[in-house]
Length: 122
Image (cartoon, rainbow, N blue to C red):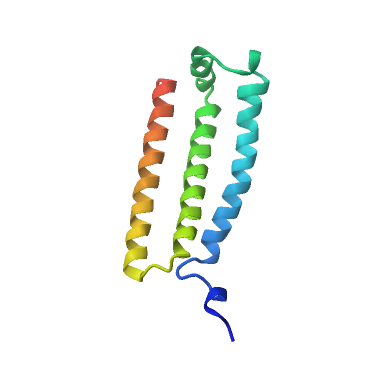
C-alpha cells in the first residue's frame, strides 16, 4: 500500500525531470566557461564595460550566453513548479501556474536575448 507522499506528483513526468537534470549539468559546464573567460582570463579578474562589448562581438559568445540564459531560466522555473506541486494544487490552479511560469520564462528569455543582441549591435 502506497502513502500519498510516495505517489508520483500530478503532471510531473520523466521528461521534465530529465530536462531539469540535463539542464543542471549543462548550466555547470557553461557557467564554468563563463567564469574562466570573465574572471580568470580577464586582467585583474574583471572585464570593463568596453571589454564586455568587445567580448560579445565574438559570434559564439552571444550564442553561448543565450543558451546559458535559456538553461538557467527553464531549470529554475521547472524547479519552482516542482516545489509548487508539493502544495498539491488543483488541476485548474496547476494549469494557471503552468501558464504563468511559461509567460514569466518566455518574458525573461525574450528580454535577456534582446539585451544580449542589443549589446552586440545585431
